[in-house]
Each structure stands twice: as C-alpha cells, then as structure tokens.
Amino acid sequence: MLLLIVIAAATLRIPNAAQLTPWASYTPIGAMAMFSGTYFSNRWKAFVFPLLALLLSDLVINVVVFGGKYGVMYGGWYIIYGIFSFIVLLGKWMIKKVTVKNVVLTAVVAALAHWMIADFTVWFGGGTDLRTMTPLTRDWPGLMQCYAQGFPFMKNFLVSNLLYSAVMFGAFELLQRRYPVLKLQYA
Image 1: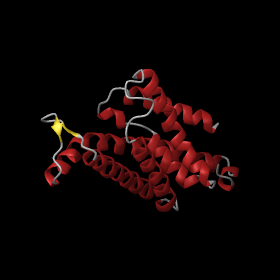
Image 2: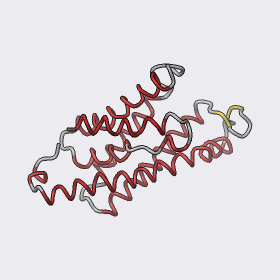
Image 3: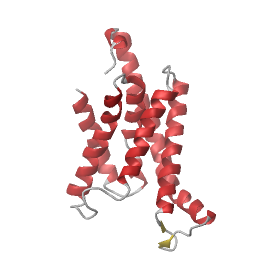
Image 4: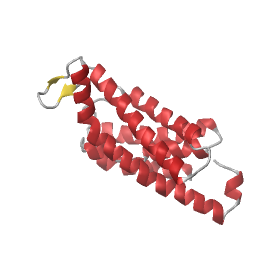
C-alpha cells in the first residue's frame, strides 16, 4: 500500500517538474514528508516514504523526460533531499497533536525553510540572475535577487503543502474515526 502511495506521489510530480516553471514546485512531496514525520512511528519509514517518492520521480524526470541531459541526478540533489528530511523532522517536532493550526503552521514553516535553504545554496553556488543572465552578485542584493527569483516556486510549494496536507491529514484522521484500529498502529 505504501509503495502505491509513493508511486502515485512520484507520478503527480513528474508532469509539473518536467516543465522547469514555478509549477515544478507544486508537488505532494512536502506534505508527504510532514505526514510521515507526524504519523510514522518507525523512523526509517518516516524518511523513506517521501524520499523514495522524490528519488523515483527525479530518476524519471532526469533520465526519461530530459534524456539524461543533466545526468542521472541534478547538481545539489543532496541539499534538496536534506531539506525534505528536515521537513520530516518538522512533522515530527511541530505536529504532536494533529490540528488544522499545527498542520498549517508546519506547512508554512516547511515552505519557508525549503525556499530559504534551497535558494541560498543556488546563490552560494553561483546561480544565474535571470534579469541579466549573468551570475548573481556575491552580496546582499545578489542574495535578495535569488530569493525574489525563487519566490514563485516557494508560493506554489506552500499551496501544494497546504492542499496535499489537507487531503492526507484529513483523510487519515477520518479513516481513524471510521477504523479505530488505525489509532493504535501507525505505519
């Protein structure tokens, strides 16, 4: 069952990520990371669940969609996987009790953390200023330009975190009410 969910999430990510637009960050992976951090008592499953979906979709996007143009994995992939591991921990730390407030707050913190860390590494690694198509300057204005360029991606990541979290957390909470045995044994 979990493998089917991983495959479904990876499949949802592929059409958007293959476009290299802000919609590329409209993905269920962030919500999966929050969900697994909250509900999976088995720590390795909490990390494997979202990271496996990310890996499967990355491989399909990089190898099949882009034909290996960027290699099997993109540069800095380990930073992105680290960020999603951090989001698993946010789910574990921030959602001790599942409430709308706790899930929304965690979704916002996860989106902001993803944006700040990922775009900092883009700037630090010599990313491109999309206005001039030259490297971003290594100063405060260069960093702010990098964050401004990444803002549409963060916005869509936040929206997807909120929507997919509503579905995942809401569905599981309803299932627990219907099938009380689920309350006793998380994955």
